[in-house]
Length: 310
Ligand code: DON
Image 1 (cartoon, rainbow, N blue to C red):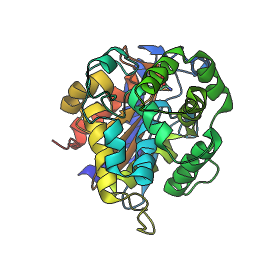
Image 2 (image 1 turned 135 degrees about the horizontal axis):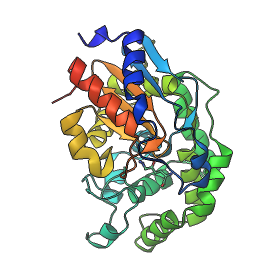
Image 3 (image 1 turned 135 degrees about the vertical axis):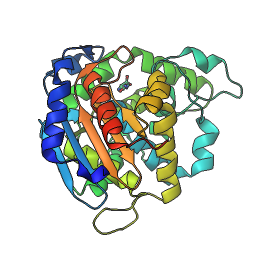
Image 4 (image 1 turned 30 degrees about the vertical axis):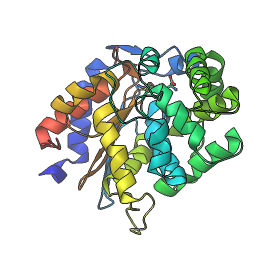
C-alpha cells in the first residue's frame, strides 16, 4: 500500500498543494534566504530498498538550516557519547519558538532544553570534534558525503555569511551559555561553525536519502554498512517527533505522524522506519517557521497512504 506512491501520483499531489506557494512568507531574517523563489516546489521519496521517486523542481538546492540540527546531533553523539551530550543539552520539548531565549533562565542546573531549538543546536555544534570551525564543518560535510554517497555537497558561503552578520540572537544565546559553561572558547568561532552548518546545500533527492538512512536504522542503503549506531539514529528520530517542528510538533504528530524536521529555508525532512525518507521543499513559511506547502503535502500523503507511526 505504502509503496503504491508513484512519481505520477507525487506530481499530482504536489500540483494540488502548489496553490499554497504564496501562503505564508519566505524567511527574511537571514537576508540571503529572502532571495528564494516561492515557486520552487519539490518532493522526493527514497525508499529503504533504494528506489527513489521525485516530483517538481527536484534539482533545485536549498540550505538545510535547522534540518542540519538532526545530522549535527548524530555526529556530536558519535563524537562524545550520550552522557556527555545530554549532560549539557536536555531532552524535553519546549512548545516555544525555535529562537526563544527566555526558558534558558528557568531551569537549574542550567542547560538548553533540547538539541532542536537554537540554543541546544548551538551547544551541539560546539561539541562536534574539530579545532577550528572549518574542521568541524569539514567533518560534518564528510559525514553527509558518507550518508548520501555524494561528495559534491558543500555549504553556501553567501547564506552562511548573511546569517553570521545578522545572528544577534544566536550570539546572545551563545554568550548566555558561555556564562554557564555549556560552551567554552570563542563565541564567534562557534557561531561560524553553526552558520556554515545551517548553510549546507542539498536538493530533495539528496535529503530524502539521508531520511532513508535514518529510517534504515543508520545503515547505508546499498552496502548495509553501519554509518550511525542504531540507538543514536533512534534518538535523532525521537527528537524529530517531539521537537522537530518546534511549537507545531504536537499538531504535526496528530495530523501527519511522521518523524520530521523543518528548516527556515522551507525544507522538511521526514524519516519513517521500514519505509524510507521523504524530503519536501517549498520556501513560504507559516508563522512558526515551517514550510506551508511541505506541511500540507506531508499531511495529504500521510492520510492517503496511512504513513503515521501512531
Ligand atoms: O539559527 C537560525 O535561526 C537558522 N540558521 C535556522 C533556524 C531554522 O531553520 C528554524 N526552523 N524552522
